[in-house]
Image (cartoon, rainbow, N blue to C red):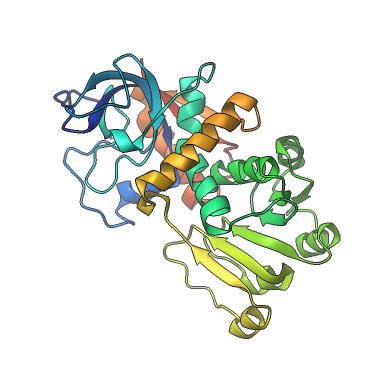
Length: 317
Protein backbone atom coordinates (compact mmCIF):
# COMPACT_ATOMS: atom_id res chain seq x y z
CA UNK A 1 0.00 0.00 0.00
CA UNK A 2 1.32 3.41 -0.97
CA UNK A 3 0.03 6.95 -0.63
CA UNK A 4 0.26 8.94 -3.85
CA UNK A 5 -1.47 11.23 -6.32
CA UNK A 6 -4.33 10.19 -8.59
CA UNK A 7 -6.62 12.35 -10.72
CA UNK A 8 -9.59 13.75 -8.81
CA UNK A 9 -12.74 11.70 -9.37
CA UNK A 10 -15.59 13.38 -11.22
CA UNK A 11 -19.15 12.77 -9.99
CA UNK A 12 -21.27 11.12 -12.64
CA UNK A 13 -25.05 11.40 -12.99
CA UNK A 14 -26.70 10.81 -9.63
CA UNK A 15 -23.37 10.90 -7.76
CA UNK A 16 -22.08 13.07 -4.95
CA UNK A 17 -18.41 14.02 -4.71
CA UNK A 18 -17.43 13.83 -1.04
CA UNK A 19 -14.36 15.41 0.52
CA UNK A 20 -13.43 12.68 2.98
CA UNK A 21 -12.51 13.72 6.52
CA UNK A 22 -12.59 10.27 8.11
CA UNK A 23 -12.71 6.68 6.92
CA UNK A 24 -12.66 3.40 8.80
CA UNK A 25 -11.18 -0.06 8.32
CA UNK A 26 -13.21 -3.29 8.30
CA UNK A 27 -12.41 -7.00 8.01
CA UNK A 28 -13.72 -6.99 4.41
CA UNK A 29 -10.82 -4.66 3.54
CA UNK A 30 -8.40 -7.38 4.62
CA UNK A 31 -10.15 -10.02 2.52
CA UNK A 32 -10.34 -7.83 -0.59
CA UNK A 33 -6.74 -6.69 -0.34
CA UNK A 34 -5.44 -10.25 0.10
CA UNK A 35 -7.62 -11.74 -2.65
CA UNK A 36 -9.40 -14.04 -0.20
CA UNK A 37 -12.60 -12.51 -1.53
CA UNK A 38 -12.36 -12.64 -5.29
CA UNK A 39 -13.43 -9.31 -6.74
CA UNK A 40 -12.80 -7.34 -9.90
CA UNK A 41 -11.06 -4.21 -8.65
CA UNK A 42 -9.96 -1.06 -10.47
CA UNK A 43 -6.22 -0.45 -10.62
CA UNK A 44 -4.70 1.39 -8.88
CA UNK A 45 -7.19 0.28 -6.24
CA UNK A 46 -8.20 2.52 -3.33
CA UNK A 47 -9.46 0.43 -0.38
CA UNK A 48 -12.06 1.44 2.18
CA UNK A 49 -15.83 1.08 2.54
CA UNK A 50 -16.77 3.80 5.04
CA UNK A 51 -16.52 7.57 4.83
CA UNK A 52 -17.61 10.81 6.46
CA UNK A 53 -16.97 14.34 5.24
CA UNK A 54 -18.72 17.04 3.27
CA UNK A 55 -20.18 17.37 -0.21
CA UNK A 56 -17.66 18.97 -2.59
CA UNK A 57 -19.64 18.76 -5.85
CA UNK A 58 -22.82 17.32 -7.31
CA UNK A 59 -23.34 15.23 -10.42
CA UNK A 60 -26.30 15.85 -12.66
CA UNK A 61 -29.67 14.84 -11.25
CA UNK A 62 -28.66 14.99 -7.57
CA UNK A 63 -31.45 16.53 -5.53
CA UNK A 64 -30.96 15.18 -2.02
CA UNK A 65 -27.82 17.13 -1.09
CA UNK A 66 -26.19 20.53 -1.43
CA UNK A 67 -22.51 21.47 -1.65
CA UNK A 68 -21.04 21.83 1.84
CA UNK A 69 -23.46 19.45 3.53
CA UNK A 70 -21.91 17.00 6.00
CA UNK A 71 -22.51 13.38 4.99
CA UNK A 72 -21.50 9.82 5.73
CA UNK A 73 -21.90 6.43 4.08
CA UNK A 74 -20.51 3.01 3.31
CA UNK A 75 -20.51 0.30 0.61
CA UNK A 76 -17.53 1.71 -1.30
CA UNK A 77 -14.41 -0.14 -2.46
CA UNK A 78 -16.70 -2.95 -3.65
CA UNK A 79 -18.38 -4.06 -6.87
CA UNK A 80 -15.96 -2.08 -9.03
CA UNK A 81 -16.23 1.08 -6.95
CA UNK A 82 -13.15 2.88 -5.66
CA UNK A 83 -12.72 3.10 -1.89
CA UNK A 84 -12.58 5.83 0.69
CA UNK A 85 -8.96 6.09 1.84
CA UNK A 86 -8.60 9.21 -0.27
CA UNK A 87 -9.23 12.95 -0.21
CA UNK A 88 -12.20 12.64 -2.57
CA UNK A 89 -14.66 9.88 -3.43
CA UNK A 90 -17.59 9.86 -5.88
CA UNK A 91 -20.60 8.03 -4.41
CA UNK A 92 -24.09 7.27 -5.70
CA UNK A 93 -26.47 9.57 -3.83
CA UNK A 94 -28.55 6.54 -2.76
CA UNK A 95 -25.64 5.44 -0.54
CA UNK A 96 -25.03 8.85 1.08
CA UNK A 97 -26.69 9.99 4.32
CA UNK A 98 -26.74 13.32 6.20
CA UNK A 99 -24.49 13.56 9.26
CA UNK A 100 -26.50 14.84 12.25
CA UNK A 101 -25.40 18.02 13.93
CA UNK A 102 -23.09 17.30 16.83
CA UNK A 103 -21.88 13.94 15.46
CA UNK A 104 -18.15 13.92 14.65
CA UNK A 105 -16.92 12.67 11.28
CA UNK A 106 -14.80 10.05 13.06
CA UNK A 107 -17.91 8.71 14.83
CA UNK A 108 -19.97 8.65 11.64
CA UNK A 109 -17.25 6.81 9.74
CA UNK A 110 -16.72 4.33 12.58
CA UNK A 111 -20.38 3.33 12.74
CA UNK A 112 -21.10 3.14 8.99
CA UNK A 113 -20.63 -0.44 7.77
CA UNK A 114 -20.93 -2.11 11.18
CA UNK A 115 -24.01 -0.08 12.10
CA UNK A 116 -25.84 -0.78 8.85
CA UNK A 117 -24.87 -4.46 9.17
CA UNK A 118 -26.20 -4.67 12.71
CA UNK A 119 -29.48 -2.95 11.84
CA UNK A 120 -30.07 -5.12 8.77
CA UNK A 121 -29.50 -8.27 10.78
CA UNK A 122 -31.61 -7.26 13.75
CA UNK A 123 -34.53 -5.58 12.01
CA UNK A 124 -34.76 -6.91 8.45
CA UNK A 125 -33.47 -10.46 8.99
CA UNK A 126 -34.15 -11.53 12.59
CA UNK A 127 -37.12 -9.16 13.09
CA UNK A 128 -36.10 -8.69 16.72
CA UNK A 129 -39.05 -7.75 18.93
CA UNK A 130 -39.16 -5.87 22.25
CA UNK A 131 -38.93 -8.22 25.20
CA UNK A 132 -37.00 -10.91 23.32
CA UNK A 133 -33.54 -12.10 24.30
CA UNK A 134 -30.53 -12.01 21.97
CA UNK A 135 -27.07 -13.52 22.36
CA UNK A 136 -24.11 -12.11 20.44
CA UNK A 137 -20.58 -13.46 20.48
CA UNK A 138 -18.10 -10.66 21.12
CA UNK A 139 -19.82 -7.56 22.41
CA UNK A 140 -16.90 -5.17 21.93
CA UNK A 141 -16.08 -5.90 18.28
CA UNK A 142 -17.12 -3.59 15.47
CA UNK A 143 -20.42 -5.31 14.67
CA UNK A 144 -20.86 -6.81 18.14
CA UNK A 145 -20.80 -3.45 19.93
CA UNK A 146 -23.47 -2.13 17.55
CA UNK A 147 -25.59 -5.25 18.03
CA UNK A 148 -25.43 -4.84 21.82
CA UNK A 149 -26.46 -1.19 21.71
CA UNK A 150 -29.13 -1.58 19.03
CA UNK A 151 -30.67 -4.59 20.76
CA UNK A 152 -30.95 -2.51 23.91
CA UNK A 153 -32.40 0.43 21.94
CA UNK A 154 -34.99 -1.88 20.37
CA UNK A 155 -36.23 -2.94 23.81
CA UNK A 156 -34.76 -6.45 23.83
CA UNK A 157 -32.45 -8.11 26.33
CA UNK A 158 -28.88 -8.80 25.23
CA UNK A 159 -26.39 -11.40 26.47
CA UNK A 160 -22.84 -11.21 25.17
CA UNK A 161 -19.25 -12.35 25.68
CA UNK A 162 -15.84 -10.72 25.95
CA UNK A 163 -12.28 -11.87 26.57
CA UNK A 164 -11.24 -9.67 29.51
CA UNK A 165 -12.88 -8.25 32.61
CA UNK A 166 -12.40 -4.75 31.20
CA UNK A 167 -14.25 -5.72 28.01
CA UNK A 168 -16.99 -7.35 30.09
CA UNK A 169 -17.44 -4.05 31.92
CA UNK A 170 -17.62 -2.20 28.59
CA UNK A 171 -20.33 -4.59 27.35
CA UNK A 172 -22.38 -3.83 30.43
CA UNK A 173 -21.88 -0.11 29.86
CA UNK A 174 -23.12 -0.51 26.29
CA UNK A 175 -26.36 -2.10 27.49
CA UNK A 176 -25.74 -5.83 27.95
CA UNK A 177 -27.80 -7.31 30.78
CA UNK A 178 -25.39 -10.22 31.00
CA UNK A 179 -21.75 -10.11 29.88
CA UNK A 180 -19.65 -13.25 30.14
CA UNK A 181 -15.86 -13.60 30.21
CA UNK A 182 -15.42 -16.49 27.79
CA UNK A 183 -11.85 -17.11 28.99
CA UNK A 184 -12.73 -17.66 32.64
CA UNK A 185 -16.45 -18.52 32.75
CA UNK A 186 -18.68 -21.34 31.54
CA UNK A 187 -20.49 -19.61 28.67
CA UNK A 188 -23.35 -22.13 28.15
CA UNK A 189 -24.10 -22.23 31.87
CA UNK A 190 -24.13 -18.43 32.14
CA UNK A 191 -26.39 -18.14 29.09
CA UNK A 192 -28.84 -20.65 30.56
CA UNK A 193 -28.82 -18.75 33.85
CA UNK A 194 -29.63 -15.50 32.03
CA UNK A 195 -32.15 -17.06 29.64
CA UNK A 196 -33.65 -20.22 31.17
CA UNK A 197 -36.08 -20.64 28.27
CA UNK A 198 -33.38 -20.12 25.64
CA UNK A 199 -32.42 -17.09 23.55
CA UNK A 200 -34.73 -15.95 20.79
CA UNK A 201 -31.95 -14.73 18.50
CA UNK A 202 -28.36 -15.96 18.32
CA UNK A 203 -26.10 -13.52 16.45
CA UNK A 204 -22.91 -15.31 15.43
CA UNK A 205 -19.79 -13.24 14.80
CA UNK A 206 -17.29 -16.12 14.92
CA UNK A 207 -15.91 -17.28 11.59
CA UNK A 208 -16.61 -20.94 12.49
CA UNK A 209 -19.86 -21.28 14.47
CA UNK A 210 -20.41 -24.05 17.01
CA UNK A 211 -23.89 -25.03 15.88
CA UNK A 212 -24.29 -27.70 18.56
CA UNK A 213 -23.80 -25.12 21.29
CA UNK A 214 -25.91 -22.46 19.60
CA UNK A 215 -28.87 -24.72 18.86
CA UNK A 216 -28.75 -26.09 22.40
CA UNK A 217 -29.10 -22.56 23.77
CA UNK A 218 -31.74 -21.32 21.33
CA UNK A 219 -35.36 -21.11 22.39
CA UNK A 220 -37.98 -23.07 20.40
CA UNK A 221 -38.43 -21.32 17.03
CA UNK A 222 -35.25 -19.38 17.70
CA UNK A 223 -33.43 -17.55 14.91
CA UNK A 224 -29.71 -17.63 14.20
CA UNK A 225 -27.90 -14.95 12.19
CA UNK A 226 -24.56 -15.65 10.50
CA UNK A 227 -22.50 -12.99 8.72
CA UNK A 228 -18.86 -14.12 8.86
CA UNK A 229 -16.64 -17.07 7.93
CA UNK A 230 -16.62 -17.23 4.15
CA UNK A 231 -14.43 -20.35 4.11
CA UNK A 232 -16.07 -22.01 7.15
CA UNK A 233 -17.65 -25.46 6.74
CA UNK A 234 -18.91 -26.41 10.23
CA UNK A 235 -21.23 -29.34 10.82
CA UNK A 236 -24.93 -28.52 11.27
CA UNK A 237 -26.88 -30.87 13.56
CA UNK A 238 -29.98 -31.00 11.40
CA UNK A 239 -32.09 -33.07 13.81
CA UNK A 240 -31.98 -30.76 16.85
CA UNK A 241 -32.29 -27.77 14.52
CA UNK A 242 -35.54 -28.74 12.82
CA UNK A 243 -37.10 -30.42 15.84
CA UNK A 244 -36.72 -27.09 17.67
CA UNK A 245 -38.18 -25.33 14.61
CA UNK A 246 -35.23 -22.98 14.39
CA UNK A 247 -34.34 -20.73 11.49
CA UNK A 248 -30.90 -19.89 10.10
CA UNK A 249 -30.35 -16.70 8.13
CA UNK A 250 -27.27 -15.30 6.47
CA UNK A 251 -26.80 -11.97 4.76
CA UNK A 252 -24.17 -9.67 3.29
CA UNK A 253 -24.51 -5.98 4.00
CA UNK A 254 -23.33 -4.71 0.61
CA UNK A 255 -25.91 -6.84 -1.21
CA UNK A 256 -28.81 -5.18 0.61
CA UNK A 257 -30.93 -2.82 -1.53
CA UNK A 258 -30.07 0.86 -1.18
CA UNK A 259 -33.49 1.55 0.33
CA UNK A 260 -32.92 -1.01 3.10
CA UNK A 261 -29.55 0.55 3.86
CA UNK A 262 -31.15 4.01 3.97
CA UNK A 263 -33.71 2.81 6.51
CA UNK A 264 -30.84 1.51 8.64
CA UNK A 265 -28.96 4.81 8.28
CA UNK A 266 -31.97 6.82 9.42
CA UNK A 267 -32.28 4.72 12.58
CA UNK A 268 -28.53 5.03 13.18
CA UNK A 269 -28.73 8.82 12.89
CA UNK A 270 -31.61 8.95 15.37
CA UNK A 271 -29.77 6.77 17.90
CA UNK A 272 -26.55 8.78 17.47
CA UNK A 273 -28.41 12.00 18.27
CA UNK A 274 -30.18 10.42 21.24
CA UNK A 275 -26.92 9.00 22.59
CA UNK A 276 -28.22 5.45 22.46
CA UNK A 277 -25.57 4.46 19.90
CA UNK A 278 -21.99 5.33 20.77
CA UNK A 279 -19.41 4.31 18.14
CA UNK A 280 -16.44 2.55 19.69
CA UNK A 281 -13.11 3.74 18.24
CA UNK A 282 -10.13 1.63 19.22
CA UNK A 283 -7.35 3.20 17.14
CA UNK A 284 -6.85 6.25 14.96
CA UNK A 285 -4.35 6.67 12.12
CA UNK A 286 -3.58 9.32 9.51
CA UNK A 287 -3.82 8.61 5.80
CA UNK A 288 -0.03 8.33 5.65
CA UNK A 289 -0.33 5.50 8.20
CA UNK A 290 -2.98 3.56 6.25
CA UNK A 291 -0.75 0.49 5.83
CA UNK A 292 -0.27 0.28 9.61
CA UNK A 293 -4.04 0.58 10.06
CA UNK A 294 -4.58 -2.34 7.68
CA UNK A 295 -1.90 -4.35 9.46
CA UNK A 296 -3.68 -3.87 12.79
CA UNK A 297 -6.99 -4.98 11.24
CA UNK A 298 -5.39 -8.06 9.69
CA UNK A 299 -3.69 -9.03 12.96
CA UNK A 300 -7.05 -8.98 14.73
CA UNK A 301 -9.20 -10.38 11.91
CA UNK A 302 -7.00 -13.29 10.85
CA UNK A 303 -4.48 -13.87 13.63
CA UNK A 304 -6.54 -13.40 16.79
CA UNK A 305 -4.30 -10.70 18.22
CA UNK A 306 -7.05 -9.42 20.51
CA UNK A 307 -5.35 -6.02 20.60
CA UNK A 308 -8.28 -4.02 19.26
CA UNK A 309 -11.42 -2.85 21.06
CA UNK A 310 -13.67 -0.99 18.64
CA UNK A 311 -13.10 0.33 15.13
CA UNK A 312 -10.00 1.61 13.35
CA UNK A 313 -10.46 5.12 11.97
CA UNK A 314 -8.27 6.92 9.46
CA UNK A 315 -8.42 10.71 9.55
CA UNK A 316 -7.88 12.68 6.34
CA UNK A 317 -7.11 16.39 6.47
